[in-house]
Length: 377
Image (cartoon, rainbow, N blue to C red):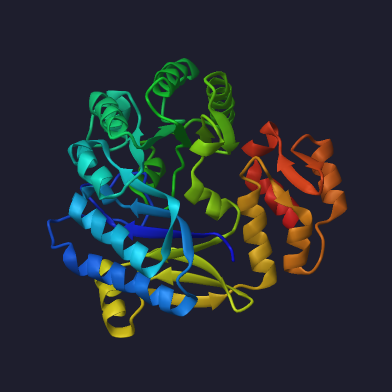
């Protein structure tokens, strides 16, 4: 049976960040119980359909699930353990904002064993520009508060921000990697359609770095992380050692199985010889109604074709340092990857091909989507 992860989407945030295109809604003090009840019922419905599988990871994401109190987090973890079998060493991650640091002890007591802190920056001006509510000092205190719980700590930062220089990023990142963390996710600022940042770009009020500067920032990021002992095991993710890697995200990158519950959550499940894709109702009220009326929260339930599964496996697998098995791709879609494409990409220095696996080089990681498109053609 494929490894199974469980993703729970909590869609509420205190404020909506101008760069965010996730399925999020402003928290307005509503009662959390109806949505918690719906998520729990949805988990149970998944278990009834697909069996009480063993889960190696439970990821509480969003949105801002750290807004929830310890008792509410405990309800979700207990429900997951009732619907599924949580492995003895199950990774239980909570995405957390720095302003919720006072609740971290409650969260750890509820069963969270890995905090993913969304600091995003350690410069006050940058945090203001990103629409964040905390300042740099609060971000530092949050990392320290998470570390004091004796649980694993990961840190999220955004770079390639407007006006950011290589020297500024070097100083910020070197300082961040000296914090009591074992993992860091470093994302280049991407201007997503339909976001406030996209509208500012259209009006000429925001100018992201050009392609050359962004590439230089990416290369500097890899250099600094490697020097600090944080190996880049995925395009945007770095860990102190293999045990510090995000187990849950590896489920996605390896195209394994995961259950997705909560408004707008996606899932992939192998069942009865088919690869099933799910997406839940996006609006919280619609999700609650769907669970109440149908027993499940998903709005789409489709069977992926072999080619669709192969394309997903290729695109996601290329992101990680172990690469992808070309025979697996061929078996899924029914024909092999063009050997001429592999040869050309290797000659250009974008990939290596060894032992039947295609792996991106440092140069190839900068243009990963283009490499995937060449291999999928």
